[in-house]
Image 1 (tube, rainbow, N blue to C red):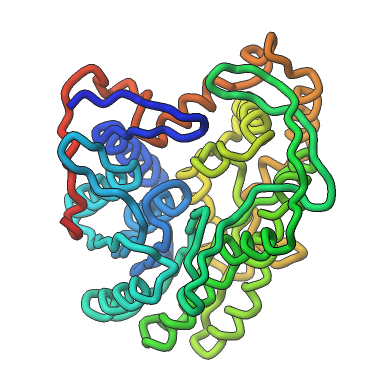
Image 2 (image 1 turned 180 degrees about the horizontal axis):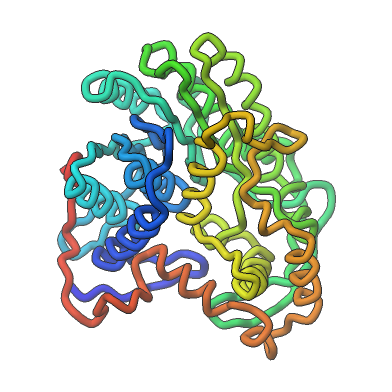
Length: 400
């Protein structure tokens, strides 16, 4: 079939198998161009492995460190006349490239919050790898059915305490406007958001992996967070999502204690603002990112997801000397350090004040934002002919 992008708001309803494969290949080529990661991981579990930072982590481990990888995700398979999700196609392309390179790669498609998928993953590790030496936790979901209580929790994106008004942009049309978001009304909404996006499930995974004996001596585990600039605090860091991120980050000492007898360690890595399916849904953030991209590209310090993860692995998680790993005052790894540089933030703040619909194309990298958004779904790659027929029925080899 011929697959073109169909968009509804911040969601693209279609994805392109050849385009997503190109996206995966581009990321692999970047990691290979940076050379081998000394003392990198060799047996890796990535929970939330099909898109964004999770996919980039899996690619970095495999092609930067020749690691065997198991990826867990929840994606819609392709069927005749119905394209699969981008994450499904990404995973298919990754496994194909890994196999070509002689690397072990298998995947599990299911609800990572469930006990069933945890047991299935443990069985696969025992069968094929024995143990893993790195666990990446990179789940992004708007809802979670709690495995112990059966209660369904849904996250909300709202400020806490008072309404928030600021600029935002429709990145498709380039229209800059003001948006007002009312504060969360019920404490339950905060609790539900923490239940979905906080650290409890990460803890459940590590507890079950350890109990099953599949964590190696010296195991590392890392989850991802974001802080951002003050202008996004009301809707992000000081809002409902921020409470969940606080909970995620607060899980680190719990896991460190749990992993102590294995000489293991856990980290939260605070990453840069990037175009993802999640960030596109947050008011204010697309405008901020389009201005940030402009500034960082002009300074020659722009990074995408794969550049961020390659730097995290090679310069932070697997430095030659563990004492070289610099953490912030709250014990977090910071690979948002270039984004948060004073000179970068000062320039973004100036542009923010000036940005209007009329000057957006000149002041920002809104086109770069659009391209990266469509790249997530396999579109806007010059190497791909989107007017040609493509085979939408693609399987993930280890799943079928």
